[in-house]
Image 1: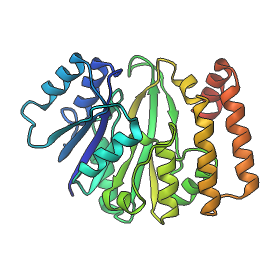
Image 2: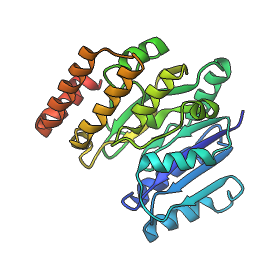
Image 3: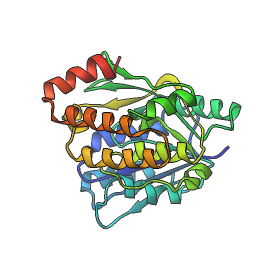
Length: 272
């Protein structure tokens, strides 16, 4: 089975974090990817270009870069990159996170045993500065039916952890830009298209959450995105009008609550 890794990089990324992310998806993996596709979402800094060129040395046959002239956002970058991927499955990776050394091996092994799965995610462990610190976990439902149930209210997958069947991605229309909610929208589209989603309840990606992560998750621009998600779910009969209204009350309340309260909600209710 051939698989690709898809990443987007933009000018505000940290070169040190990018190097760690790149090394974690190749140098430290027990099962190497067949292809690595990186989209440059606009012009980058000299330091980022240097890290990317050093990483590609000796890997030119399977590491491919696709520079874009302007920054269009993650949804657009992933749409471009996913069309360039040739693997049977596409693993997502962010430019500042770290994949566990056995991530690809474990996810591919599970998919080979369960070829009916179209998307396989995992739990994630969130850290600020070091992998040695005590991390909080974002645990998602394992079974498809529970993922669908959670998807009515919250994002049921950890985007950076997923492995997506390329044919299923094409079937549902692929990535689209949706105001910081590109991944949640994609899962809903895949569910509506009859795709099967599952999660491994093991943290196989370590996600960096410093620099205002909690406050960004409560950005006001998300309210517009959530409205579009409710319209989509209503259209495809994934929720009813009461559930849609309840979801909007929840997100508006969350967005406008103080940052300190957001952190408390994440720590006590949305994470373990």
